[in-house]
Image (spheres, rainbow, N blue to C red):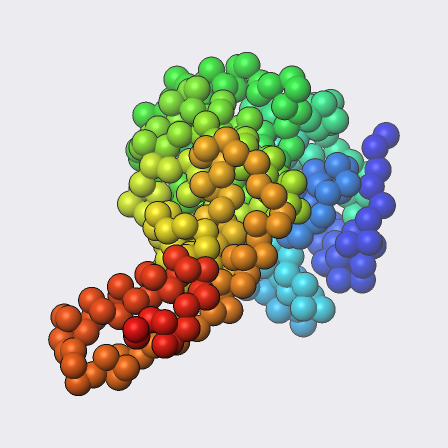
Length: 378
């Protein structure tokens, strides 16, 4: 018997939510990421639960106990309870009735196996009772411990239910897979056979998955497998994962944290067009890929951007990076151009004034910021 004993499971808020349902005669199980990550010794963030109680019943029970209930996804069977400022997403057992590759029509069920069968990967179909006992309706524990990302039952069918599962396959492989064994062959083949379905997905869903994938400690093997199936070209035309492994190595050598935008810059393509980035994300990406030297990027956009430019450019050339190269970038970020427009007036104005300022600034940067105001005006 497998059992977990986690602080988040024993907390008063968690047990209060469980008692709300079990005292009323219902089943309740923690499910998905919290169980998976606890078993792997990984951090747990979101607490999701499954129950045989229908949403209206969950809402009714919460109201009777004075608990705050939010119908966050009640049409899909989900109610969020907030207990002691901790959110718990509670979803009724469901079974798929029909799917169109983007969303599923579901019916409620009172059977945990029905609920497990509609999930994506075996490692995500693990459940934990309030006392920590783990239920494994579909045999996911061996896959979890082997770090094998395996679709539940028929891989092709699971993907056709929701084509986003193609990207989730590579994302989970990046985060939890055993790269020495490679991706599951059946799953990889099913992804390759269904890549056209990626065109049916919203740009927002694709963007979220890609950023999560690229945030993995080392997404290079997953991106290579993704490129081999054609999925990378589908979601990010023109992308080339060739320098990504080098970038990850350089990041590690300098102790630099993973950053999906830096990695997007390294694989290229047209992410600003193919993905739906926020204004801030698009700005960061544009700064990294501006073509400026690392020193000038540090001066114009800050030390972080200058460092990322250095990493991406070095990775593309296959060159090592010495930690000492970061000091000049930091120094550049603290420089202030000594000239102002007034220094050229009234002799110059309009476009000529702008050109003079630009030329003087370029000389100053190329000098390593050593030219003085007098030097530049001479």
